[in-house]
Length: 142
Image 1 (cartoon, rainbow, N blue to C red):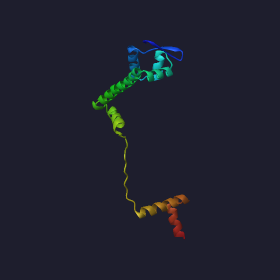
Image 2 (image 1 turned 120 degrees about the horizontal axis):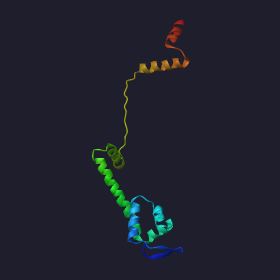
Image 3 (image 1 turned 135 degrees about the vertical axis):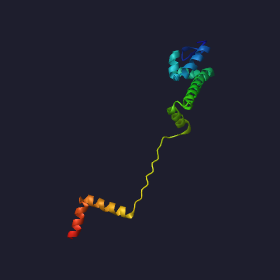
Image 4 (image 1 turned 30 degrees about the vertical axis):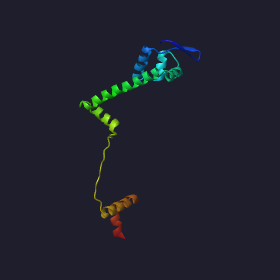
Protein backbone atom coordinates (compact mmCIF):
# COMPACT_ATOMS: atom_id res chain seq x y z
CA UNK A 1 0.00 0.00 0.00
CA UNK A 2 1.17 3.52 -0.78
CA UNK A 3 1.07 6.63 1.39
CA UNK A 4 -0.84 6.58 4.67
CA UNK A 5 -3.89 8.43 5.92
CA UNK A 6 -5.61 8.48 9.31
CA UNK A 7 -9.07 7.11 10.02
CA UNK A 8 -10.39 7.05 13.62
CA UNK A 9 -6.85 7.17 15.02
CA UNK A 10 -5.90 4.21 12.82
CA UNK A 11 -3.27 4.76 10.17
CA UNK A 12 -4.45 3.20 6.93
CA UNK A 13 -2.05 3.01 3.99
CA UNK A 14 -3.32 4.48 0.71
CA UNK A 15 -4.13 1.99 -2.05
CA UNK A 16 -1.41 1.80 -4.68
CA UNK A 17 -1.59 0.42 -8.22
CA UNK A 18 -0.99 -3.18 -7.06
CA UNK A 19 -3.69 -2.87 -4.38
CA UNK A 20 -6.18 -1.58 -6.94
CA UNK A 21 -5.40 -4.53 -9.21
CA UNK A 22 -5.94 -6.86 -6.24
CA UNK A 23 -9.31 -5.25 -5.44
CA UNK A 24 -10.35 -5.69 -9.07
CA UNK A 25 -9.25 -9.35 -9.15
CA UNK A 26 -10.93 -10.22 -5.84
CA UNK A 27 -14.17 -8.49 -6.84
CA UNK A 28 -14.10 -10.42 -10.11
CA UNK A 29 -13.79 -13.65 -8.17
CA UNK A 30 -16.99 -12.76 -6.34
CA UNK A 31 -15.60 -11.69 -2.97
CA UNK A 32 -17.81 -9.29 -1.08
CA UNK A 33 -16.54 -5.88 -0.06
CA UNK A 34 -16.39 -7.18 3.51
CA UNK A 35 -14.13 -10.08 2.50
CA UNK A 36 -11.91 -7.78 0.44
CA UNK A 37 -11.55 -5.52 3.48
CA UNK A 38 -10.42 -8.55 5.50
CA UNK A 39 -7.83 -9.40 2.84
CA UNK A 40 -6.36 -5.91 3.30
CA UNK A 41 -6.58 -6.19 7.07
CA UNK A 42 -8.96 -3.28 7.52
CA UNK A 43 -12.48 -2.98 8.90
CA UNK A 44 -15.36 -3.19 6.43
CA UNK A 45 -16.59 0.32 7.28
CA UNK A 46 -13.09 1.67 6.69
CA UNK A 47 -13.05 0.01 3.27
CA UNK A 48 -16.48 1.51 2.50
CA UNK A 49 -15.22 4.96 3.49
CA UNK A 50 -12.13 4.53 1.31
CA UNK A 51 -14.32 3.55 -1.64
CA UNK A 52 -16.39 6.71 -1.14
CA UNK A 53 -13.34 8.96 -0.88
CA UNK A 54 -11.15 7.31 -3.51
CA UNK A 55 -12.92 6.81 -6.83
CA UNK A 56 -10.07 4.56 -8.03
CA UNK A 57 -11.00 1.90 -5.45
CA UNK A 58 -14.70 2.05 -6.36
CA UNK A 59 -13.82 1.80 -10.06
CA UNK A 60 -11.49 -1.15 -9.48
CA UNK A 61 -14.21 -2.98 -7.56
CA UNK A 62 -16.94 -2.21 -10.12
CA UNK A 63 -14.70 -3.14 -13.08
CA UNK A 64 -13.77 -6.44 -11.46
CA UNK A 65 -17.42 -7.38 -10.99
CA UNK A 66 -18.42 -6.20 -14.48
CA UNK A 67 -15.55 -7.89 -16.32
CA UNK A 68 -16.17 -11.20 -14.55
CA UNK A 69 -19.87 -11.01 -15.42
CA UNK A 70 -19.04 -10.36 -19.07
CA UNK A 71 -16.59 -13.28 -19.13
CA UNK A 72 -19.11 -15.69 -17.59
CA UNK A 73 -21.92 -14.43 -19.84
CA UNK A 74 -19.72 -14.98 -22.91
CA UNK A 75 -18.92 -18.52 -21.81
CA UNK A 76 -22.58 -19.23 -21.06
CA UNK A 77 -23.57 -17.91 -24.48
CA UNK A 78 -20.93 -20.07 -26.20
CA UNK A 79 -22.15 -23.14 -24.33
CA UNK A 80 -25.80 -22.33 -25.10
CA UNK A 81 -25.16 -21.95 -28.83
CA UNK A 82 -22.60 -24.66 -29.53
CA UNK A 83 -25.24 -27.37 -29.93
CA UNK A 84 -23.53 -29.60 -27.36
CA UNK A 85 -25.26 -28.32 -24.24
CA UNK A 86 -29.07 -28.44 -24.55
CA UNK A 87 -29.45 -27.82 -20.82
CA UNK A 88 -27.46 -24.61 -21.16
CA UNK A 89 -29.52 -23.61 -24.18
CA UNK A 90 -32.71 -24.02 -22.13
CA UNK A 91 -31.16 -22.19 -19.18
CA UNK A 92 -30.14 -19.30 -21.42
CA UNK A 93 -33.61 -19.03 -22.94
CA UNK A 94 -35.29 -19.19 -19.54
CA UNK A 95 -33.06 -16.44 -18.18
CA UNK A 96 -32.88 -14.19 -21.21
CA UNK A 97 -36.20 -14.72 -22.95
CA UNK A 98 -38.55 -15.73 -20.11
CA UNK A 99 -39.12 -19.20 -21.51
CA UNK A 100 -41.00 -21.64 -19.33
CA UNK A 101 -41.25 -25.39 -19.42
CA UNK A 102 -45.00 -25.75 -19.27
CA UNK A 103 -47.17 -28.41 -20.73
CA UNK A 104 -50.70 -27.73 -21.78
CA UNK A 105 -53.03 -30.71 -21.76
CA UNK A 106 -56.44 -30.49 -23.33
CA UNK A 107 -59.07 -33.08 -22.60
CA UNK A 108 -62.14 -33.13 -24.76
CA UNK A 109 -65.07 -35.41 -24.18
CA UNK A 110 -68.68 -35.52 -25.24
CA UNK A 111 -71.15 -35.65 -22.38
CA UNK A 112 -74.86 -36.06 -22.96
CA UNK A 113 -77.75 -35.27 -20.63
CA UNK A 114 -78.35 -39.02 -20.36
CA UNK A 115 -74.74 -39.51 -19.17
CA UNK A 116 -75.24 -36.86 -16.52
CA UNK A 117 -78.56 -38.33 -15.30
CA UNK A 118 -77.19 -41.89 -15.25
CA UNK A 119 -74.07 -40.71 -13.45
CA UNK A 120 -76.15 -38.81 -10.88
CA UNK A 121 -78.46 -41.75 -10.21
CA UNK A 122 -75.45 -44.08 -9.94
CA UNK A 123 -73.88 -41.75 -7.34
CA UNK A 124 -77.19 -41.59 -5.44
CA UNK A 125 -77.38 -45.40 -5.33
CA UNK A 126 -73.78 -45.61 -4.16
CA UNK A 127 -74.54 -43.09 -1.45
CA UNK A 128 -77.42 -45.27 -0.27
CA UNK A 129 -75.19 -48.32 -0.63
CA UNK A 130 -77.58 -49.97 -3.10
CA UNK A 131 -76.53 -51.72 -6.30
CA UNK A 132 -78.43 -51.09 -9.56
CA UNK A 133 -79.80 -54.65 -9.41
CA UNK A 134 -81.14 -54.14 -5.88
CA UNK A 135 -82.65 -50.80 -6.97
CA UNK A 136 -84.45 -52.46 -9.88
CA UNK A 137 -85.75 -55.25 -7.59
CA UNK A 138 -87.13 -52.65 -5.16
CA UNK A 139 -88.91 -50.88 -8.01
CA UNK A 140 -90.56 -54.18 -9.09
CA UNK A 141 -91.69 -54.94 -5.54
CA UNK A 142 -93.38 -51.58 -5.18
